[in-house]
Image (cartoon, rainbow over all chains, first blue to last red; front, side, top):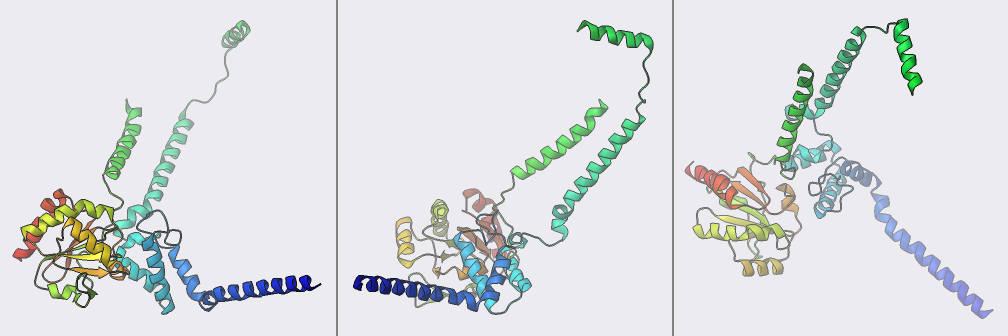
Length: 155
Length: 175
């Protein structure tokens, strides 16, 4: 009976502790839901310059962590997405953006695929036209039909 | 013969694109800071923490700012060249020690020689972000008016130094 009580007390103690511990961890997140959402949104838009095919959100490079922290501080100050992106572009160039702006140096990037698509479509149309011009199937003559049968019979 | 013309043209265009692509270094991201004033900072010196270095102090001179760190492997590669450059006394070279500790930085300079007039300590990497640093070593050529004229990403090689940096420095010094 006594042991039972002790066990119950211990279980209660550990449960209480874990509840307290999780409450402790959750607090900073709770206070910054909006900021964290903005940080997440922006860091998925921005390229990590150290490991170039990852976003800042995905990257574990030290610079990516630093930049995320920098973004978090700017977000906490109430800066808009555009202001934060402009801040980073001023330092690292358009390359940090996964969706670069449309301008003379990026026309090829934005329009290239469509140009290729148009070329492909023109090629397809030309090929189909040529096929149309080819003589239509003519019925074969009786001698030709006999030849075919002979060849098939040989097999 | 004519039917081979189109595939041949397409092939040549692709070869052209690939040949250019092979010779581009994707790590060399053009810096938007070239042609802009060097971002201001005021950082403590490596050997005298009570004193600070600021780019303002360099107005009127052409100078080089080399971003380095004791943990940076590629910095070891360019270090002898920097030491030789500083001995030639052609252009003042200042260092920015990026995300490093004083003890390790000091040890590194004791081992490899100290080519720098002074070293600014950017321990948390904040100033590095202002300079768009993403891979040490990086070197900035800054003119008399405090403008960044050139940025070298990655280690300086003998070729880059004699073909690009020094002619540029000489031209800027003559201005």
